[in-house]
Length: 333
Image 1 (cartoon, rainbow, N blue to C red):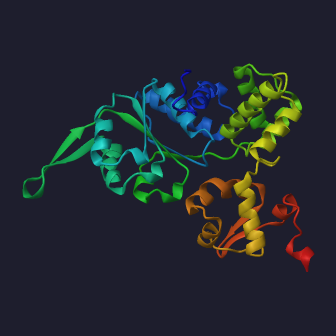
Image 2 (cartoon, one colour):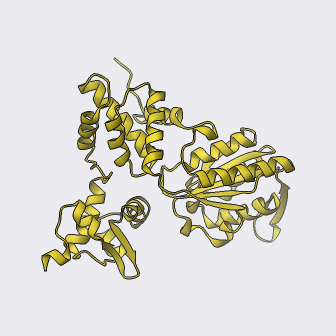
Image 3 (cartoon, rainbow, N blue to C red):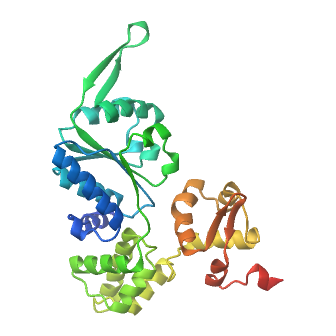
């Protein structure tokens, strides 16, 4: 009997690692952030000190983790990774901190989900490289203070507004990643196609780029799925027809909108007359988590000019009506 893969996504994750840039020159886009990091890191190396702690924020898939690995590589290559949800108890963080080596980078993904009690342990570690532990309970409890080696904390978050002000203020630099423009996404697709050893036509690259939501992770995912389609239904070459068929299969339109994006816009237009509609009401109407709407769907729709946030709620803009081929309010009067 053939063996089955217990983790069907493991191959995709392995490919993601293969496509991840390992040098600054391979990292396309985010030029201002790269330049800022190079100055910060060069200064730290010149002083022979650990770099300031860094906070990367922005929508998922823009390269925050990749930047963390590039920073670690620049500082010596040592990095430990964890995430906010994985740090359930103070002891979890203490175990990570006490195992750091001098100059190592500690990368915490989803930092906005760190437990507030754990943040209290993190503050002295970031400021004074001290770890304060409470031993025992009740009147006999006492506090132990341990010295930590020089280290750099890099935190990544998709929701910077959910980070507490005391935690935010302890980072030496906050760097916000933005969606990539079409030229940068095109360069990323060409680079990934070369690594994957797959031929892609110029028209196909243009279509993939426009459907990638300005996000490298999505661009690479669409490229892999187009490669699958071309291998099964074509001659292995990704042409425009293969990309169009792939997008149709995935229910992604040429602007990169997925079914839930279109459903969100249609709900605002059809159920709430185009808005404004409050986020909680919209979440209830969509049976969707408010955080998912704010983190996943809204940033891209706002970048396209399809959606507007206002004090009174969300509003569908004329561009959304045109994209969905729906008559706007003014045309219906």
